[in-house]
Length: 166
Image 1 (tube, rainbow, N blue to C red):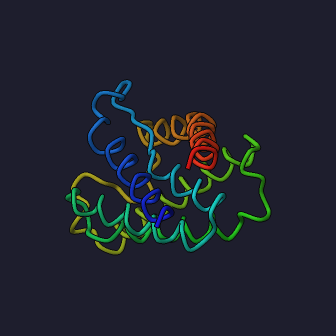
Image 2 (image 1 turned 45 degrees about the vertical axis):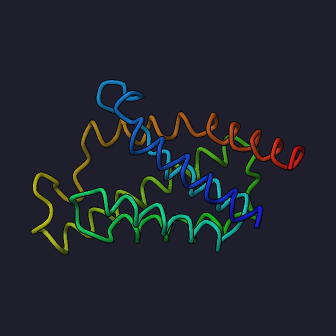
């Protein structure tokens, strides 16, 4: 029961951070993808099933709030959760190089997945050009990668506190 409650708090925290505080934490219109970092963190620390499940929940929530093609984020975050969980034994989640590399690769998978969906279904793309490398998109990936060690550190610290006091 404690595990379920901790996942609910984890989910609520990152949903609030991504969806409601984004406009306050943006710099020049660029806001990191905290949900992507959270899914990779779960994959590294808890394994495939937890990361896939939370990736699915995060993606579904984001798709509900979005006007994009429904299911695109759900699919991408579930796949990212699967692959990051698949490599949880091969990488040390405390090494910054592993964290940054995993989130960078996850960001590329996220971008390529969206581009593929919009290439297949161009009706929902509006202003989105599939497989186009843009400055704002590149900056979002860079900011997400740069903020990754801090988010991992905070989540590791919270995990230690949870084990100590609960």
